[in-house]
Image: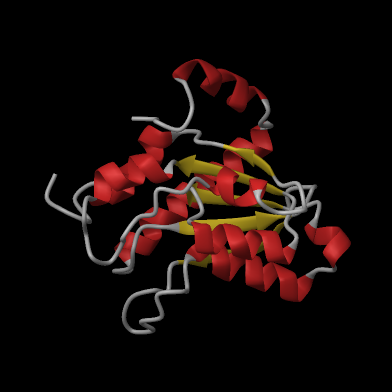
Length: 176
């Protein structure tokens, strides 16, 4: 399923994650299931500080009743964290997300100054699940590529636990 990194690199990615990181990433996946249960797209994100304290959580708000397609979970969580923390605190935060940030959300992470991103489901694996669904026109632009164009370094770890993160998407976008 993973097309962004060779399978042989996945154990080394997981080795860079603490137990707390895994728990927070798994919580973002659980929240993505809750988002689906609420009738929303199955995405969720969490911003946590260096000690694992949750600063913000968010679901996608890009479908009715709000209907704002810019309100992806990652962007909403990053914006809320930026309202709560100073730039030097944000630099020590991690965005944990059930799916790889799209280029819009990667931009939000960059501009808020969050220093680290840990994601479960890759953009490529998401595309396999969504197909050509009009509510999720997936970009073929990994967040690493977006961050590489900036002046600030952002650590990226992912994809991790793709099979687990894919579960809330199965049957949502098309009949599986």
